[in-house]
Length: 440
Image (tube, rainbow, N blue to C red; front, side, top):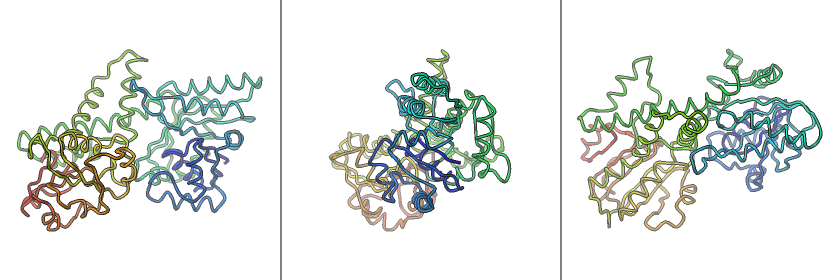
């Protein structure tokens, strides 16, 4: 099949590359010439394990192409994926201007039947807006070219996106006509040869499914974080509690890890957007999700509060090593990352920070340009130099089994604040550390 993917961000680039990997011819469009130049030069504008090699392989095979030419892209694919950004607006709702612009460009130039697929995370009702935008452009041209609009939300985890796309646990497709359904079944047939994973539903249900999935996962995280804070007060260990409740098959173990709060491009944005959609479009106050959001906002201050409780509210003259900047391991994504709040809390209290992250430091420098009191280290060991304590914010694998003797020798005081519960408290405390984790 010939496929156009509009947008070469996280979702668009992963989706386009994986679709090319199974033999389709894919043209990725982006209006940012800098991104397209990076891709044509053999690089990628994001970090995702395995993606760069897959891009190179499919470009070399002639299946994957990149362009800034909107008209060429509209003509190219019989299937047109819209995978542009939907950043949060000032009121928390999703900003739909880029989705609408993409739809208008398709309508402006299309000449034959197209299946237009909303791949971006979009509010319920977006398919109707996309359909109306395309129809309006066709009407301006005086043509009546047929088209279908489909909702096909992505369920990609940053750091494991290729596996998620190539071996999906489900493929949600929302459409209202049989022709579009047949096209989508054909498109995804190579990804479900073992058994049928395609769940067909109406468009609005598909749009809501994406928000509902992320809201549920965010709820589990905030629930465990609140329990962790309670466990600390009661003298319980949240890791033991996690194992106890996770063994119940009705609950399971996934997304039950207590920590310093969730971040990234999806959970915070999607919870806010769903709350806003419910309030504005349905007049409903989603009390549970409002609590989830509030709990997460507060959780991002937990590490800073622990540090102030240990060293005093005035941290002037104190210096801290910070391991982990990305919102999670295996990505360089700094959007809504907990590290941003921890750094702000420490700097505002008068402390200085030296940070290290395996891949996210360039992104962090964009978030904190020329920030007084914040510096960066080339290695995790270098970050420890002259630090009063170590603060762990991201669960990178290389942080899981460090040389504790080196840590102890480099720190001014043997204190570790662990925002991801990486270590066994008995083991670390037995080596002479003061170990302050989450709910332990």
